[in-house]
Length: 352
Image (tube, rainbow, N blue to C red; front, side, top):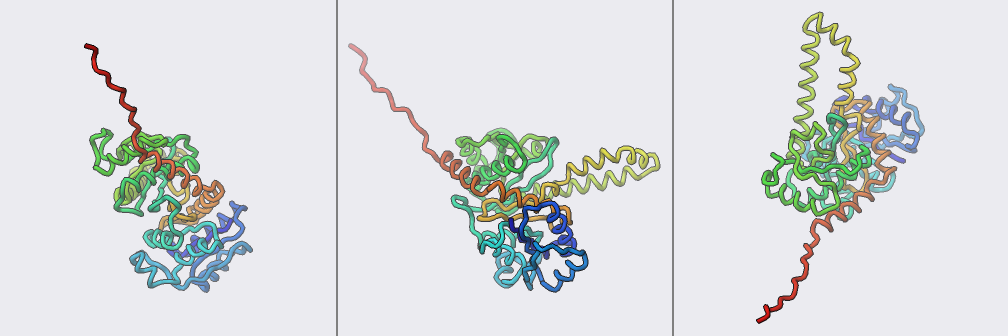
């Protein structure tokens, strides 16, 4: 398998992500070639500093970087030699099987959509985010690619999310819920109500609505929503996690007695920290694209990239795109199938 890694968009610089490349290559012997994309002089110097000498690694020069301040489509037009675009073009040309990037999310979505196009029968790609829950994890889709959606979009997201949950999280018959402000059928908007009605006609395991309360308490395996709502949920949960972590550190070190208690509970606290860390699942794939494109957080460190490389290998090995095309096609056909009406019985006049 051949991967392309854009190492230029992260908060910690390319060297940190190149450390992740080194870890990922050591753990994934199935990777036959890995392109690191960015300015060649800087990357060559960084590779020498960390001692990454692997015949599978090749630098693909890219003289420009799409920053977080750049507007995605306009930025791609102006910066035709940016690292995100160059990495995506490797998949388009068939030289790579997957792309991983920590850069501008909008830029990644735009570059992948423009260059790779969507899979057959899929109108828009969606970001699938894996978030921890009480007993495992769930898929939130869409995490931010599509602020405005149609019923067709949400139904396709549900089908793709179900495939991804079953394959990557090993969930049999993933429970699908459309995110709403209540569990009753009367709640939600016209969009969510229509989506649930259509989904219930498919073979997907549809719960109906799910509330924010359900997400982290194992109420659902796939939470479906538009990218506007999904991105708010994603960033709110990240903020809450950091807030709780900061509170714990503050309170558990406030007195000598608490410090002793924290030391005794260290293994348990470390286990909780590990379970709540979404980065152990890798990054957030852009599902529905004719290729494998994985977005990792801008603040991602080396271990996140290592897990994302494992995620990309598994995505390709399981041929998830073919499965998603089939599942979406079946769901769309069932959702819009005409309702069969039994023929009326002949009417005979009553005997006189």
